[in-house]
Image (cartoon, rainbow, N blue to C red; front, side, top):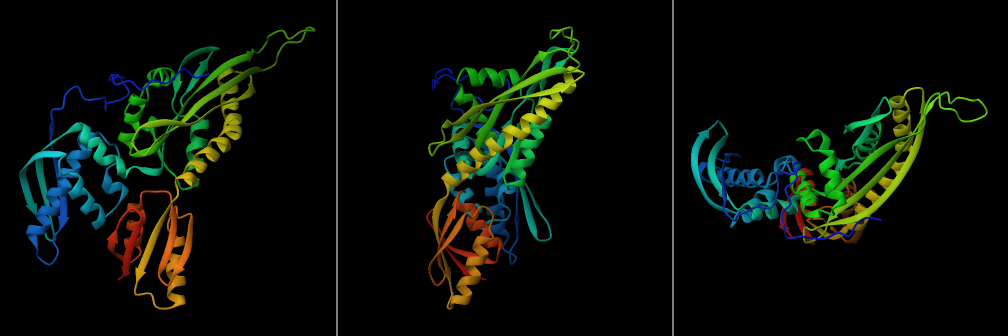
Length: 376
């Protein structure tokens, strides 16, 4: 049974998390860059846009995110509007340091002062529901002794591959800055969800899958098993304990699911037996975990009304519906009339709107419940 989880107001400093709670409300001042395209020779507008992007880059830098907004949404005018809105009150001051005008673009560098706590809240809504941060290290056996954790095993590789095959974006925490498995283990045992929430902010994901794999030598090679028979192989049992964590609407981290699985492996050497056990564990546990992650996505699916202006025939409406159904993570499309649809979408509607712009539509009006577009 897991220990009770206490949401404490005290900031806990763990070595694996650089996004600890701030000890003061003082703004952090950093330098950042932004770039914008000069449209029809309008340099002043491009300069303002570039400065806004530089300010947002400063917000992401202070928030400590590993995945920036331009990676998540490429060339989205809608995102630029949101950036302009969200930097207000977060960036307390800024100063233009350098401006460089290129053939068709302008690049600026600014010094911006940012409120750390508000920075994390500002970037939070851009997190992907379909992105999963994964950290499941396994303690290794060498010569029958437990020595250290391995962050990359056949189990973790099989899990990451299964997530990618289903279309999820995987944030492999083992591939990022050094994270100590022992500290992660302590955070889990102590119920330190405040510290773990830092990972969600840093990797811009609303879902975190963390766990630990512990091996045990059940029988050793050469061990007497009775009747004068010696064991020809070493038997290793690996046990996986994991938790699936998710952020709720208020940004708080909660345990969505928890479980444990085990498997055994046989081989002459302990390390080889553990490798076989991990492979068997992957075959048994990965489908179970995938089912829980996919269920989470299904539960998040919201209904967004999409209206396409200028649709005047059933054939045109059918073509638009086909386009909507081809958008990644669209779970269903209902016809409400010519050019009107109700779309089931588990992500922030911002990403649905951005996908529409990439398919030749122009955003006329946007809200989290309704999107109006026009074909270009």
